[in-house]
Amino acid sequence: MSGSVTRFLGGSPAAVAVKLFIASLIVGVIMSTLGWTPMVIWDGVIRFFANIWELGFDALASSAEYLLLGAAVVIPAFFIIRLFSFRSRD
Image 1 (cartoon, helix red, strand yellow):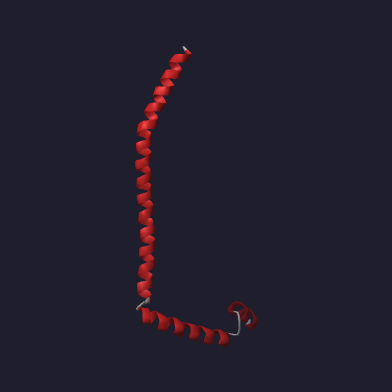
Image 2 (tube, one colour):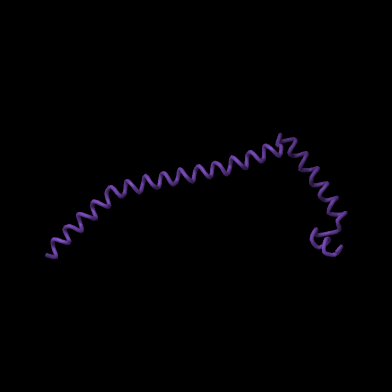
């Protein structure tokens, strides 16, 4: 059991606990200096994905607009070309 825990943690549990304690202390000092809290970071992540979501729908709306603009020219041109090619076969 101890060997599998050590292998999973990447070292002895005591050594890993000390490393995590030191890393947490350093990160906590840096975050406090920058005025970051876990809630600020979480809100930033939520806003990031919300902006990506909104940009995605804006891109879809733009694509639909381009599709309609192109269809306004392509579809009548297609029918005109088909009409002329149909008449030329007769």
